Image (cartoon, rainbow, N blue to C red):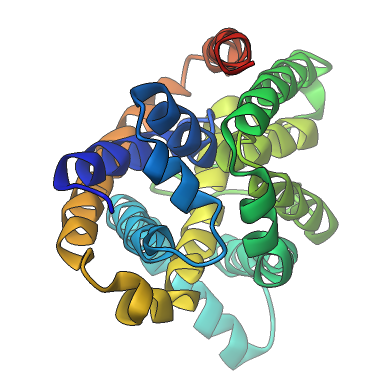
Length: 290
């Protein structure tokens, strides 16, 4: 069973690493193993365990933190969605962004419903997580290489106070970026990282790729929590709901601080520090585990 201390620590790890491009699932597997919390590691790869209920709380808390931080953007996006339904047209940038997010969410959402649980059971193990973390570092470096290619190909994509031209991001490209999130079902591959790389591939700069990634992550993370709500209220949550609450509060607070930091960080910085971290930490963990 998970203790309150373990719940808070893992909650903090989840909140930070879900948004930092270094894989929350990978760290939630690797760090407990490093700390000697073997019962927690075992529970993560069990077909049924309290950890399923624990993840529900962490996902919901992280998504709520994102909703709070981007509340103004989400208000415009939701308004744009309903106004486009009413007019049956997509004219404004907010309307277009709403449909881009919906379309980009579908691929990972469908695959997640079918395969997420199976992939977690198979790959939520320390050695696999360490290997995929190294792969994640390589992916981030490739993304930075793409960012430095012909800069004239970048689109004019802004999510600031005045949302500007979104026409340069096509619905096909949104599907490709959204589909890239499927790789995040493997422990060690970062959802935010792989989505940002998808944005960089499209030609977005780091700031816009990060913001699109965080907006895109919100419905996916929230849906993952709501979809598995039965684990929280069912037998899997019995005896650990207090720990789940403590871990969720920690995750929500950490996620809010993380997204606030990253929203500013990517205005003038790149993915390279995170890529180097993944390569170094992943390699060290492979050596330790093996």
